[in-house]
Image (cartoon, rainbow, N blue to C red; front, side):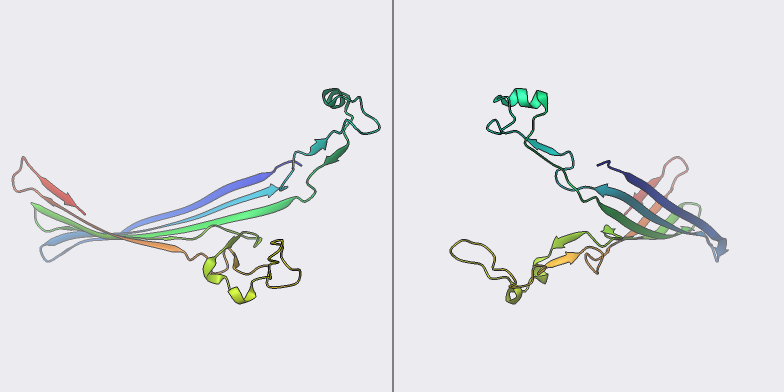
Length: 198
């Protein structure tokens, strides 16, 4: 089966400096910005055995009795290939906001205060076919019965999806990151300057 995929990422970025003015003896400017990232990937996956498997048996009726010769002659016994072409539509979103205030206290001292906030969403499939096992969602009371003699599961017992969650269905949670920014520049002499940032 042919593997097909489409990838694209859309980014919206906006930065504003709406206010520049003087408040008392302080000259200041405000900056605001936002970035929205939306990434997508659509890909098919035929699953196991997508290239096909041929088996040869030198004891079959139509055989040369030599495995290599049967390969060259195309005398295979069976051929199997994956029949299901499944798709995944991966989705990912990220949001970033920032605000910054620059103050010039006087000719020798400048301060910059800011805050950056990121929201990083989880990767999920729009088709709802991304799953994983989450131990906290597993309920022992719903576990299937296991035969002690063979270790096999007893049919029609328990919940086969016990502990399985679909990514994007309130799991996992989006991650957030806050990062304050503080910097100062001090120029006590005309020929030197001291800078600090956090």
